[in-house]
Picture 1: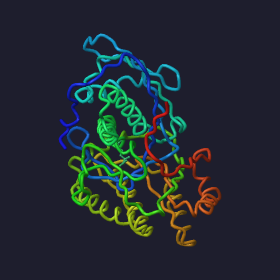
Picture 2: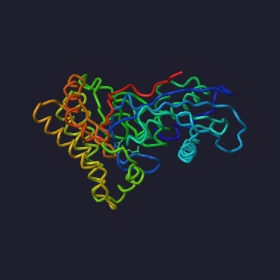
Picture 3: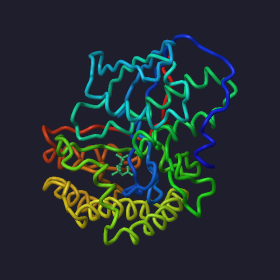
Picture 4: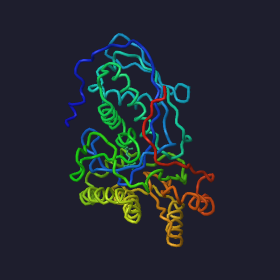
Length: 359
Ligand code: PMV
C-alpha cells in the first residue's frame, strides 16, 4: 500500500466544533527498531507488546476557523499551558497535513496527561503521538463516516509513525508488528498491526518496569537512529532483526518461553551493543542495570521460573513474565531488585488492548 493511499478523497460531511478523548498506551519492543530511512521508515521490522497502565490520555477540542494558511492550537499538559510541546506538534502537523487536509480549517486545544510519573525515563512520545493520532482520526471519521475500523486503525498507526516511529505500535493491542517482513503477509513499513496468533501463555503477560535512572536520556532516539547510517554492523543487524522476528513469531505462536526469553534478551543487548559500537559511542545502561540483569539470570537458573528482561533506549529494566508466576516474581523483585531502583520505584504493567476512546 503506497503512502498516497492515506490521502483522503473529498469528505462527505462537515462539523463545526466538538471534542474527543482517547487514551493510548506505551509499548515495549521484543525485536527492536533501531535505524530509520526516508520519512520515518524503519530500517528493520520490529514486534512489541502493547502495555496497559503506562499511557497518555489526550482530549482534543476543535472549532472551525478561517483557513488562513496556519495551524492554530493551544497546548495543555495536566491542565496547564505547555508551550514547550509546540515545536514537536507543529512539526507533526506539517508532516501529516497532506493526509489530514482539514488541519488548517480548525483551531485545536490539545490537553494531555500521562499515567506514569514525570521524568521516569519512560518515553511518552509513543503513547503521546498515538493518542493525538487517534483523536485526529476521530475527527476524520466525522468527516468521512464510511471509514471502517480497520481503515481507522491503519491510518491512525500511519499518522502516529510520522510523529514518533514506535508510536505506530501503540494503536492496536497485545502484540504488534511494524515493518516489511517477507514471512509476514501484509506487513508494512508504513504502519503496525496486531499479530493475532499468540499462545495463551502470553495472555496477560506481565511487564514490571524497574526505574533505574529517571533522568533525561543522554542521547535522543533521533540521534541514535541516525548513528545506524554507516554503522559497521548495520547490515548484519538489520538481517538479524528479520530472522529474529521470524523466530519470535514462532515462539509466540507455540508458547515457547525458552525461545522467547533467548530472543528477547539478545535483542535488548544487541540494541545497546549498537549504541556502544556507533561513532560516537555511548552507554545508556547504568551499573544497576547490569546488577539487575545478573540477578534475573541467577534467579531464573535457580528457580526455572521463565522471567526475562528487556531494555529500551535507557537504563530502566522491563521484567517480563507470565501471569501465573507473578506472585513469585513480584516477591523476588521486592526482595532483590527494588534496591537497585532509584527511590525504590517500579511500575507494574501488563499486556493491554491498545488505544481506547473515552467519551
Ligand atoms: O520511536 P522512537 O523513534 O523513539 O524509537 C524508539 C526505539 C526503541 O524504543 C529503542 C526500540 C523500539 O523498537 O521501540
